[in-house]
Image 1 (cartoon, chains in turn yellow, purple):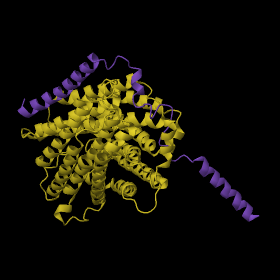
Image 2: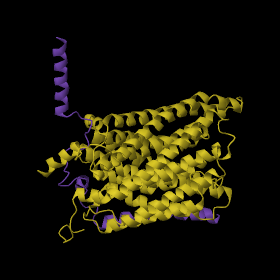
Image 3: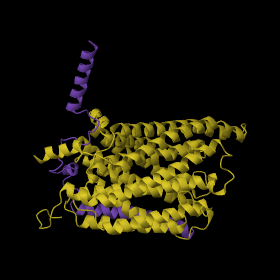
Image 4: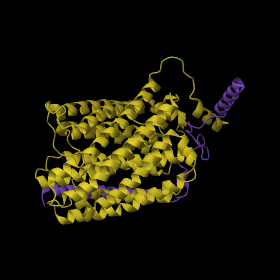
Amino acid sequence: MDPGSNQPSYSVSDLDRKARFVVLFLIFSGVFWLLFGTLLALVASLKMHLPDWLGATGWLTFGRVRPLHLNTMVYGWASLTGAGVALWMLSRLLKVPIMLRGYIIVAGVVWNIALMLGSIQILAGFSRGIEWLEFPVSTMVAIVLCVIIMSASVLLMLITRRVKQLYVSVWYIIAAFLWFPLLGLVSSLPIFDTPTVQAGMNWWYAHNALGLWFTPVGLAAAYYFIPKVLGRPIYSYGLSLLGFWGLALFYNWNGFHHLVGGPVPTWFVTISISASVMMVIPVVVVAVNHHMTVVGSFRAVVNSPTLRFVVFAAMSYTFVSLQGAAQALRSFNEVIHFTHFVVAHAHIGMYAFVTMMLFGACYYIIPRITMREWHSKGLIKWHFWLTAIGIIIYAGALQGIGVFQGFTMIDPEVPFTDTVTMTIPYLVARSVSGFLMTAGHLIFAWLIVRMVYRTGEQPATPHVWQKIREEFAT
Amino acid sequence: MSAGALILVLSSLLIIGGGLALFLWAFFSGQFDDIHKGRMLPFDEEEPAGKRTDQIFQEEPSEIKKKHNKGEEQTRGSR
């Protein structure tokens, strides 16, 4: 902690070199699950408008493919890659190498095996039947234990850090690594046996997994990469802390707004609705802070693959959070509950915000830890536009029809079948957007594989940013 | 209230209590003493503020020149 102590200080390139293997391992594992989850997503999406397709094979039915899509994306792609990104940022911000690297590799291997076994069990029909928690308890407990090993690494880094003051990203990351093990363990307890209590636990867990695990990692990345790429400090450090403590105090109660109108005590739901609306404060604070930092640097955003994704993701965070606060209101919820609107809302959160943020982070991190330059600038642009346009079509189509579907569903004059058939063209649009995003993911996977397994001639130094680093040195 | 619901409420309070404890620790260990310095934390001597990074889509001067030259050659050829 004391800069004058006799411990060696690490340069940025030392830290990146030490992080290389463990961070690459976590990102590669994540991308494997991204591709697997994308395949499941396409199958599930096509089944929505081609209900007979693959319907005769038990393990390919919608009820198994769709939950597995959610679980592999959440615990495979977003968690593994997010952990890699978070550990790398923490190492840079605390100026110490990632601790317990060997243990984290072992944890990563166990995590991947647990995901595979869990996937087989879901496809074989042994799902737990709780949304976001379909993996068997054994898989969940294994994953949580792996996260606890990473949490130990995070705490060790915090204790041995070489800087006194903690940047806002560090706050978010520490909090995420403390909250997620608690969420995972509580949700695995065998005490939620009555249906209403189980539903309460379900949405307490699922909403907090998004808000207290993925959101902090995503926001930590936004607060790190925006200033880093622009070379301009964040607009207000004080505001950024207000945003963090606001999230820490308000988010945890949000989950029960999923049960508006359900047979749970009204005060449970009312607390959730108030907390959901209170989340507007930290969200607006974060949005203002990011906007004031980026404003006036549009060229720099366009010229940087990282910032294209990160700024898109940060804008999506503001949008999805304000939308979420509105959706929690009873009057709004009455219309959109049980419609495609909510499905799209979840995808704006997990895809347009979390996934795009992780893509952006990967574009910054991988050249620095491998000391190599991206293979093709054109392909990065393709990746950005395919995924960005894909998720915009997805959200636009489903949220547009979702509102009409909701109004039709509460109209007793309209037969239920009509509320289903009216959505079919929009479900086709969803599949089309799914193909666009799949193409983007394949490009991304190809780019990072090219980065590590290179063939033929290649430049010795990544010219663009190496030059910048030399400029700094002189 | 059933055991499950009680555990949920207690866990929620634990999350908030943990947050408050973290905040008090931060406050009394002087994390908020110099709030203006905090924004410079992502930067250091090796990568200082004021320099953009990751501008890989920016056309480098040599590339722009090359394009320019190519254009000239083409016009010359057509003449």
